[in-house]
Image 1: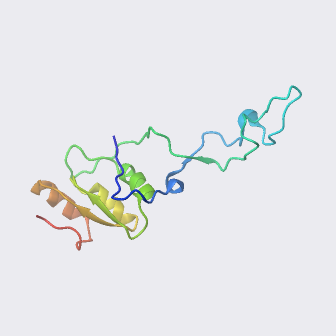
Image 2: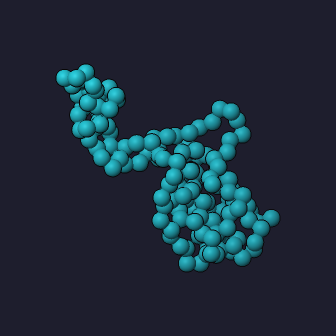
Image 3: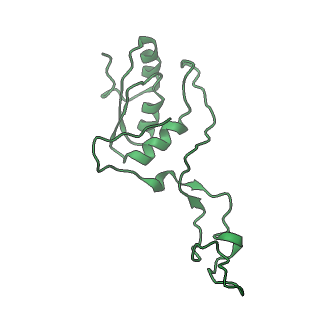
Length: 144
């Protein structure tokens, strides 16, 4: 499970940043873009009122993301695409991203690449060493 958390009831969420390609760009049900009714009075556009598709749709509940190992990292590294989607949806450039289980630093690396600052918390000194190798940014990375 993935949780995007906010301190406030008012929060930022950029649905457009994570839209995905539609499998079909027909624009409507049964291929019709007109939204007109047929001879029997049935809509031939699936009830969508003739809305023409942009080729993208909202992100679905189940995400299929291929694994992508990081050679220096521990066994549980997740692919960069996973934090990328969360960061794009839940923040703007310049925002600060917190990863309380930093590990090898995948989330921080992605955040930095997307123009965000990051704070990583990691207890294991070996993982901290691995993460430190990944970064040029040092101002927010602190070993406690």
